[in-house]
Length: 88
Image 1 (cartoon, rainbow, N blue to C red):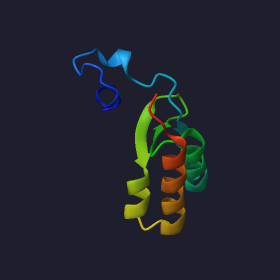
Image 2: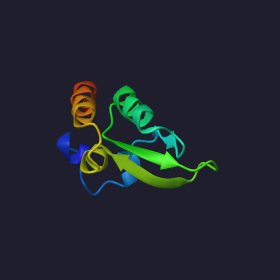
Image 3: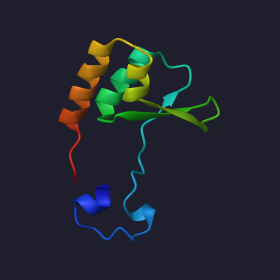
C-alpha cells in the first residue's frame, strides 16, 4: 500500500518498499507496555518475538479492542499513532 500510495510500481520486489527496521516486543511484555511501544513507534500492529528472537505473533489495536481491553486507552493509542505516522 505504501508503494502505490506514493506512485511506485506495485510490481517492485517487496524488499524495495518494506520496513526493515521493525520494532517488536518480547512475548513477556505487558499489554500497557505494548500500547506505549505502539505510540512510540507510530504503529497499529506490533510484532511479538520469543526469548530466542523468533516471531511468535502480532498484536493489533483491534485485537485489544475485541478483547474488551480499556477502550479509552486503545482509542487514545490509535489517535496517537495516527498523529505520528507519515508517508515518506
